[in-house]
Image (tube, rainbow, N blue to C red):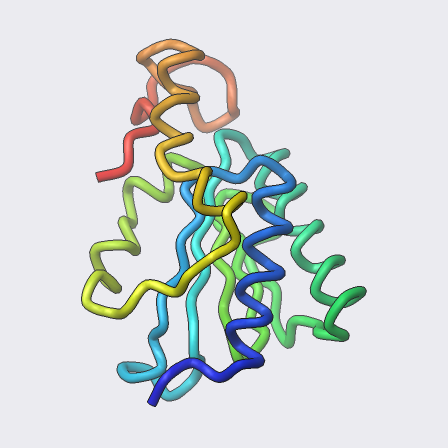
Length: 155
């Protein structure tokens, strides 16, 4: 089984919305062969909590406005470190860069086929590392201010 046309449409719209809000390292996986609960996962990250919220809000607004899709569940809003939007057909994960490195969802889903994304979304690959270099090697602390961190590297 492969992701449905509707799932691919949702993934592309969500990926473009995330790219428009300057998300980092946007990637999507077709998980339909290994999970029966959804067709695709979209992963994106941002260097601070405020930007995570902005990306999530833009994705939600864009999918509702353009495709009439509303999430059946939204989790992680309070801390904005890892927000999950469940649209049944797809699940969107927007993570703070530190959570992205720590949980490494890419490693879990690496055997699943990657879904093609809009060019703007593809261009975000490697932006977390680039951002870390621009802001200093230490990265940022849990509050988004400079301090101990991961350096924004995705492994």
